[in-house]
Length: 212
Image (cartoon, rainbow, N blue to C red; front, side, top):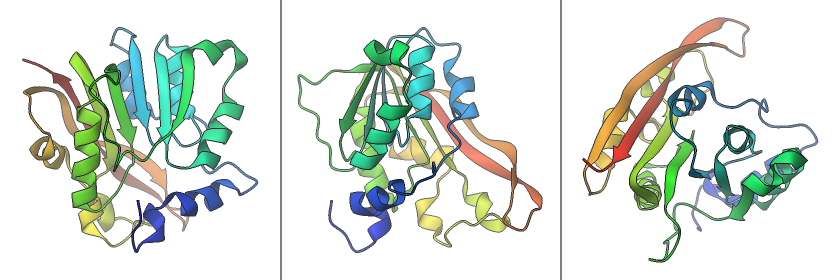
């Protein structure tokens, strides 16, 4: 998708993922682990999978996983990081979730998840609609992101309130059909700021189940 801000384009992230060192920790998101551990493994879609840590963890937990990202370099790193033993449980697909329009015969998933996808609100709503459309009846949608309150901490967050969201914001943006909220919270955790101080930040966590 073309636009004026390079941070929201695949080329920007391809350049970042060309750096010699990993961009992320390589560990799965603790909030995702907490939300998903109690679910029965089935098929899963992770949007914005980056270097693949969450998708790889899901596959190791018994899920059949498709990881998508708009950066080809991210997907190459994810494939390189995936253990050979999980090859049959992992697939990687280049896709821009903001403009992805699934076909009617596209697969639906028991779990659809995305973590720390931060776009201006119109693009976020489009992405959320695309993700929600891929959730099977009775399946779960898990969205995790930086809470707006992080703007008041020492963490280096862009001074752009519109790209952050609460769980209530996400619920308001969810398209029909009916969704039942399972988790709807701002989860605190401790993080190290660039100046070395440890500060409390919050992750927005929304888990909903499709259907009554």
